[in-house]
Amino acid sequence: MELTFEKLLEFDLIDELDCFLVEQNKHELLMDFINTSQDIQGIDRFIKEAPSFPGSAETIIRSELISAIGATLAIEGTKLGDEEIEESFRKAKLSEKLRRQQQEAENSRKVYTFIVDIILNTDSTFVYRESIIKQMHKYFTYNMNYLGNKPGAYRGDYPATFGVPRRSSLCRTQQEVNTAMAAFVRWLNKTGTGILSTHVIVKAIMAHYYLTEIHPFADGNGRTARALEALVLYVNGVNTYCFWALSNFWSTHRDQYIMHLGDIRDTCKPWDFLIWGMKGYLHEITRIKNLVLKKVKQLMLMDYTKYLVDTKNKQKVKLNTRIVDVLRILVRLERISFSKFQSSPEVQALYKNVSATTKYRDFKKMEQNGLIKFTTEHNEPLVEPNYQILGYVNYRV
Image (cartoon, rainbow, N blue to C red; front, side, top):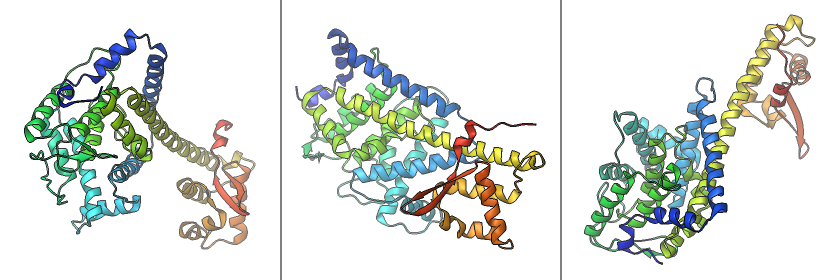
């Protein structure tokens, strides 16, 4: 059965899927969903509870936000590298003139900041409103002059097409858009009763799908839909570390993403898109968990190094404070060409008034203590922090 305007207004695709899975005894599908959900909850709990040293969380969040902005713009056909997005942030902060692509990046940053602000400033139970969706769209399309688009306003009485291949929106007039959006917001605020309809990530993904299908604005619908998805996750406390994680997954698998959206229109069956999106989200937060773990390992390695320096009189290999500074630089750079590392301005500054023999001795001491390790790639010596040593260290007081 193909989705129609009348069917869209019911917003019951998940309710029907819940009934189908139970009535048809689709135990294997249900267990796949439940297991994926439990994996997500476990990793999400770890990310929330994991310790971090000052600035580490902010570094990951900023990096992931930049990636998410690049990803959501890439789906729309705008290609921006991380450095270009960073530059747009800098220029906006200094009130410098932004290029069109930089403006899109800065607009995206404002949307995610807006999401955080409205949640943090909500004293009672959060209520979804059309005005919130309009405000996100207004931020996304500010100063962009998209053809026929008015920031924060629904489109007029003209057909809208989207996707690949092109499809027409089921809402053909402004009145139909108004009707669909009012019903959509009621659905957003409704509490489900089934296994799927009560799940936060399912709600977020379907909110994304439904807004894309309504296509209420002249432009910027995809970005607004993905931001709404992020809002639903953040409202419900899912991955507050970086609640926009799914944007990276959709962008990396853009062709499948577009195909799944089209399949729901053709069949009214969202299962494939939902379970694929759930596993995509699991993949993304697993990657973020690994970033958090890396930060913890960096902290532990630096702490162990400081311990060796503080207790050097009891150690076979004597370390000095200069080695702590060298390792701190390497921890930030990770795996790097040894010659490039030695010639870096920071390392050269540390050994400015020290002989080459002393420099060699320092690196040898770090290797002997298992703080660093050397490998070779394409006949090029590489150096990196040795986090494996953390599994064997023994602090003796």
